[in-house]
Length: 164
Image 1 (cartoon, rainbow, N blue to C red):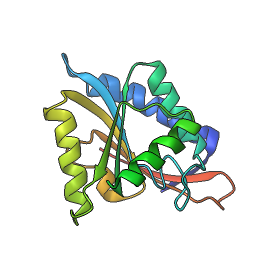
Image 2 (image 1 turned 135 degrees about the vertical axis):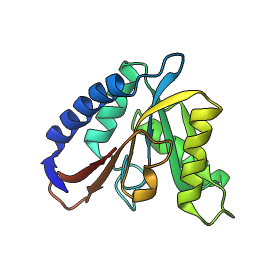
Image 3 (image 1 turned 90 degrees about the horizontal axis):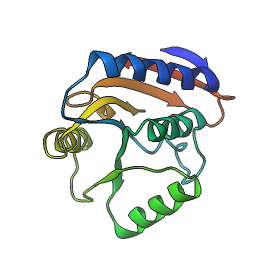
Image 4 (image 1 turned 60 degrees about the horizontal axis):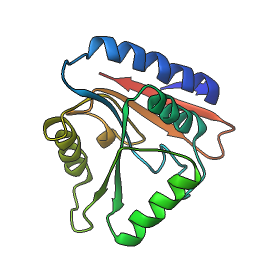
């Protein structure tokens, strides 16, 4: 994995997006970026402690009219959904669509693949990138995958690896 500071990671993401827009262009499809939530947008174990290069990148995607889609393994209980929406609203994070895991569904990898497939086939979005902290956050239907590790105690450094 490559280690960079927060500001450099934001630049890495912007550059990867620019390349992905060219390499993965699909006419007649809206562009989207898929994000995991815990350990990706907010630090693990928190509801509202943002990982700044990611939240800045989401705002960058909003500015470019690229759809922001969150696919989280958080169980889809009404309280989780409401708490998630409230915490992201406090962080001024705008996303176009949320997918929460059905609490009875056990296979996280299959859930994430099915959600990305839905985004691609039903919503007709071209997923340019999938960003997350677990291997199941990327892969089939996910475009360019960015596996990241941001630890709240890491002094503002992120480890990342790119998967095509």
